[in-house]
Image (cartoon, rainbow, N blue to C red; front, top):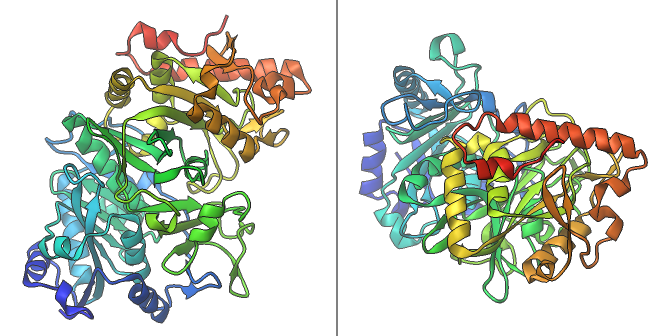
Length: 533
């Protein structure tokens, strides 16, 4: 094995690679961004665009493939995983077989390795190794996970290994997969296998799932959320699925970013799992999202954005709605490094209601917070998964069901305990539609969502009057600075009031029917949800 930057390939590393059972012709370990970009361009994996960032096209797969994600069934996982439509079982003997096939596949090939961490808290961080057959994917891993110091790299021993080999495809009839694509997590062997897809987000989300399995046993609440901190050291969390505004709304020029997607909440406070951000780019503008706009520069990876004469066109969705950019956290001005914060004073649940009936902001009780956390209502937006062309109403437990291997009640219990202990206030904010459903109404302007969040974080909403929405069982402020009064009551924005009533009742019914699956839940939590007369 050879390497371009010899010192990174110490004998300890080489011994670990051999012990893992792979023998590449060449291995590049923890290359810097310039070297990775140079290799990616030489290998025709991408091009450098006018911003200086690397543009890549992920081909057929421009989003996650949730039906191709599996967890190995064994004694460790048999009674701890919430098996079903999201967490699919995979036989251990099939995992072992496909692992050996992948090892043989990469022998005598050029490989790229990133050694680093998941988790900014030194006490709970997870040492990981990412093995790639594409330079740009290794650049993605380097920018998204936490990068080690020189000293840490010399001593690095991975606890989990992600083997992401894009060019290796499964044979379903032989390998036991659903298609040629697979994402398989073995929590006992501590290995993640990814093949057949070039969509880099599978790497980050696989390790998110691993952390979501490991941390509850340590009393740490893992969260699909973004986090930032104010000038008074007040930490805020933003929960929500892709497309609801987590990344955008947490990138606030008046607050410092802790992280945009994955965090833990321990007895010491909150901490980011990642060392970078993975932001949506569709319709990106400098005026609306200057922090993200300016982060697209040398070292960043731009996924599936159409180029016109070398210049990114963020309004062009010809390849996908799910255009993305990956960049290190320190590309955001004032980002908190290391990315840790205190106990949150305010939590925001973000939902993008495509039906246009939920109020744009409401305050939740602790039980209401647990109810809406377990429900995880939103609209799945175009491009985040294959086959999604327009918004579709869904319930995603914990605002991140695809990444939560344990039952929702495990995470909700941790949420309730943390809210109680730290006197945290929780708001539900709808960043979706107003004045009618998708196709008739309009999406709520981002400046209004920002104004609502600003008021919540400043404590201004503690001083205003609230009205009670009996149907949705929510408390809604009657006044928010810089937000038109009429949009605070969604019914007022609809021309056809009867149509609003019918749609609101339908959504209420959907909430109730969805929550019936949670059997071991206290009556107080059940009563905190929507109510049909």
